[in-house]
Amino acid sequence: MDLYSRKQRWKLVLALVAAVIVGASLWYSSRIVDEVREEERRKVRLWAEAVRNRAELVNYTDRLFDRLRAEERKRVELWAEAQLKLVSGTGNDLGFYLKVVSENTTVPVIITDAKGQVKAHRNLDESIAKDNEALLNEVKVMGALHKPIPITVYGDQKQYLYYKDSRVFTELQDVLDHLIGSFLSETVMNTAAVPVILTDSTRTVVVEHGNVDSMEIADPALLKARIAVMENENRPIEVVLAGRGRHYIFYQGSLVITQLKYFPYVQLLIIGLFLLVSYALFSIFRNAEQNQVWVGMAKETAHQLGTPLSSLMAWMELLKEQKVDPTALTEMRKDLDRLEVVTERFSKIGSAPDLAPEKLYHTLRATVLYLRPRLPSRARIEVVSPADPDMLVPLNRPLFSWVIENLVRNAVDAMEGEGELTIEIIPDGPEVHVDVTDTGKGIPAAQQSTVFQPGFTTKKRGWGLGLSLSKRIIEQYHKGRIFVKKSAPGKGTTFRITLSA
Image 1 (spheres, one colour):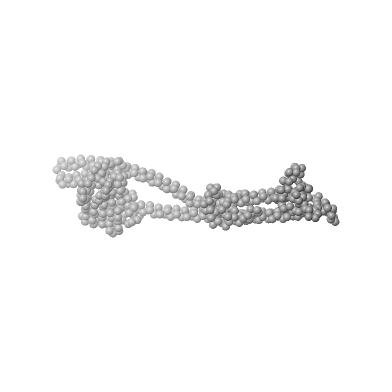
Image 2 (tube, helix red, strand yellow):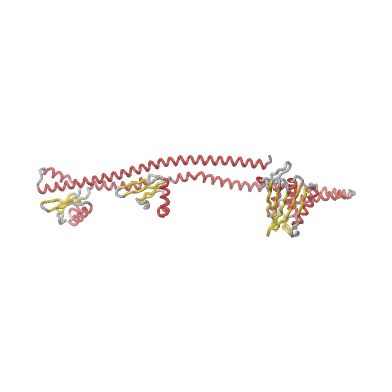
């Protein structure tokens, strides 16, 4: 197994481990959220029951006050009857009536004749009792509060007894009002750490609200949507408050639960972004390091080749003087020229090469003519003549020829030394494509995007650097593109080089 295959497998293993960790984290977080949500629902149910119980207590208190009010009216009627008995001197037990009259020390009363003139009063403030106008106003106030009690004096002559609630009853009524107010502000709003909206019987008018944005309350559309969400999540609590009619309490889970629900995803997103940025930075530094290694190796190779080249050139001159076979010297000269080209190629790696207008077709033909004698005879290579053989393209000829050599040699290896290799030039507007097509064994679809990776090779003997170097030359130095255009197992492969025309 080559280095790249092992790398791919390790990536797959790490991805599976990461997926397991993410799944376990989400499952555990979801479990915690569910437990917290259930605990909160239990508390909310207890809170809702407490609300109902307190509302019932308020209503019971109101009913009790109604009974007290009725009892107080009976006492006033009894007091009026006793007052009449004492005045008329009738009755069997005047002591009892005197006791009844004297024991009324809390209920303010005023007796008037049929014309509204005050005849008697009891338990009034001293400021009212001494002011006739204030007495008449007090009669009107009492009449508005309670229906006066008629007292038949004799014949058809009547007097009227006006009264209002006693001081004790008034104080108790204030307590009831405060109790209802505290029910709204404390029980409904403050005792629940959840969003709450209290509405009237129409479910549209908000009486109180808690843990809800005021902007939602002010906007009818938002309010209607929020109430619908609350009603869908929890059945509203119906309460009838004394003197205030039917009300509905809408509530839902707290914001903390919602935040806990989405917290794992937010946390994973942040971690993912951090890892993505870290990986991107790591890749940048790794590529920079690889570039330095590439440049260093290339320049060192060029340097190492320089010394033996100089020595070989000297030896050739010596052999030439010794009348060695000219044919052998010619072949040696070709190999020396080739070594000089290779040295020049390596020396240009890492520095910005000069691009000069070159005749693309002739450059391709020259490269193929050099390679043809050095390839198996059963590997047929053809450079298709374009419509414009003299078309110029900005190239660095030594480096571009190196790319073509790598593609041709890989294609011959893929064809196992036998088959057809076609190089075609395709003009395309401001660009020009060079397609290198072979009839070899093809590249599997899973490997087509990885053939340019350093170290990737399918050969038993090879470093897997040829295509990686070719990609670097085309994309970094010529600002073009190189990729697998198409490939099918057993039918061959087409590599495409795209350059600016």
